Image 1 (spheres, rainbow, N blue to C red):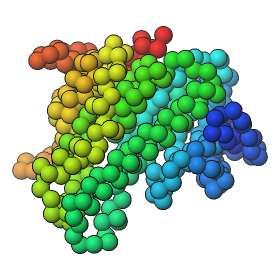
Image 2 (cartoon, rainbow, N blue to C red; image 1 turned 180 degrees about the horizontal axis):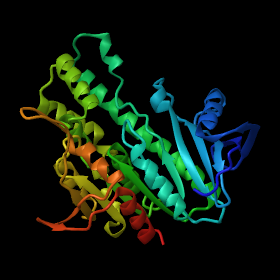
Image 3 (tube, rainbow, N blue to C red; image 1 turned 120 degrees about the vertical axis):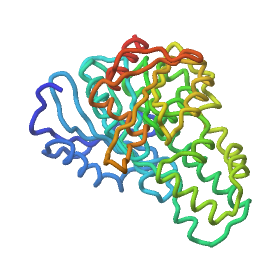
Length: 367
């Protein structure tokens, strides 16, 4: 990152809705991300829906590292969805390339190293920090039993939640694009972030020239009905207990209500030459078959696969293995063997880390 100043000045800035105005806030002596976050937390009540506030975390001769907070244009009362934090690494040179990194539902570590590696390689980088609630289970506490019509309403709420997050991501990226005149933008996402990345890239190919999806897939309804992720399992358990609806009927309703926000609906617009998928065959959070659906819908881009599970606890008569979805995270730290999916065949490839794959892909496709 270079020689970051130990005493950074925090400068709060708020972009207007069209990014045409810039309001400078009070400058405070600060140091690093914690001070920046405390300052931005205090700014949140002043933000209007659709506005961004930024604060400097650190600065070197080559770039500025900023933290930002954004208030959603659609306030739901769920703080995890209404307020979005992120980091913006901005080169001091005129830069035409922006890399956007979207996290999973409940973690941000998967985008940390790729963000810093991309910044060191000369990209401007937006790294969103994870906080997202697919559905507020307290809404189901009102009654013991719900009707089929009410289940359709539940599905609409889920669709609206995804659509709002897509729009918030797009609003932030558009503001930064207009403010900095980016002509080449790549977007990468992990898990739920990969679903968002492929949806946004397919819906807006005029904005995004490169796409990466890691441990992700298409067919949102199918994923929600089969995922082994604990939060999603808990939602399913409550649904079947309180709605008294059969699985096949629930799947049919979900597919109808989520179709318009599913990456499968727009993936055909993605250029396969500038897209990449990375997954783990042993993933049960977003199972392999859903990655294959996205691969086919997106015109069969390059698809690299791992076959890995990490033992967490292993004794003679008992073992516990980390799910393949999370085992793939090993590639954040060390190169893991990857195969390339080619029709019905798996071709062996070179071991790689995730940041290497993302950086190499963006360097090739965002020239």
